[in-house]
Length: 161
Image 1 (cartoon, rainbow, N blue to C red):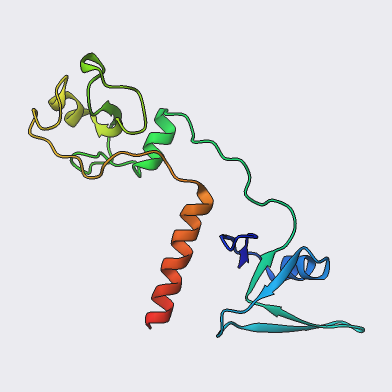
Image 2 (image 1 turned 30 degrees about the vertical axis):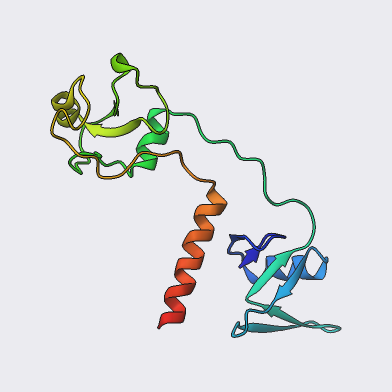
């Protein structure tokens, strides 16, 4: 596992890549207490390769922009599922607050909806149509933050076992 300079988990890498990063001085070992280490031998060097390393050079936090609000990105965010009934068939986009009522085409106002729910809701607010959203719409988060959340949740589960 590779961490950034500020200890944000970035990615899982293979042992060859970890060795290159350690030998070239681009990374350092991290010890979280009970982590594994692999011993790698060459004719002239014996190297301890830890399970976790931290980058020491460069700025791995690349500039990331929130993706545009479009069909592909909204469907991806909503896991290709209608946010009203849970269907995954005949999906469209729906403005929670209709544009005719001042709703914007933003991440906080656009959700995935099946054709049936979209036509049932029509030009009304969800509560006016008697419908409830399964989750509150929001902009996607930085991929590194999403990976970090996934990593730390997995670590907590491993420690609990």
